[in-house]
Image (cartoon, rainbow, N blue to C red; front, side):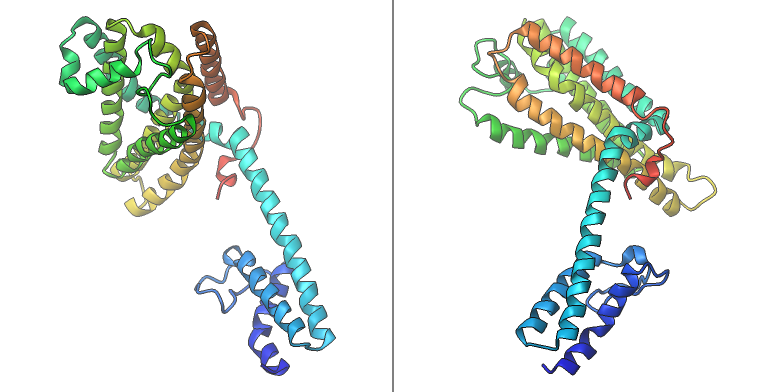
Length: 337
């Protein structure tokens, strides 16, 4: 390719990059991008930067004029600085979201959080007491084989708790717990699209199942292993399930009561607000999976230490949700876009 043809082919992209870097109000997407949106927010600078690097390499290899090589080299350097500056800003946004944005988003949607908490805890309490007092009630929720399996998982004689003897390593269980926990949370959230009924079902179902396990294991005398096991990671896992349910209820409420806007617009708005909660929820589930795999399952740590650390985790989580981000003017809508 001759230099003239090379410049004619790629100069529109270079001009767009120069305009973008100069802070022009109006920018267009490079021809390598397939988008009808010409707004600066939609300009894919990293993709343009990669294309530009390839074009600079081609210009050097083909020994085009020093003027062209210098121009492209300056553009590459300017793009490099802007791309990595944007990445630094995004990192700061995520840090700000974790410190302030997520707890502020929870408090903004407190009514849904409290409703989800009630839908989860009330069935758990009722079922837990029922299974403790009535040894046959557990079989209304689980099969006899499932009951035996759960009891075997928390047998005080086990080398590790929470799974059967001879099972996979802690690292593999960490991956399993992430998959399992995030799957539960996602179903609880996404099913809220059915006018909130799906989220209500999963909150109640998980509450009933968890309550049945608590009641049965307490009744058979495995409380000394079960409660120290769940108290640590439960601070993150159980609250995350409630938060996922709250996000799902937000979706359902937007469809049931859209207000003065269309249901589609209300759902889009609720979805943006709900995702702020879900981002934090997924992070909590990763933390819970790590604790469950490497801390909760250990039998070398005493029951007293596990209970004390678990109580500390619950205090930290509650304090974070209630107090973090207060006294600041950070708007959680600007943290994660």
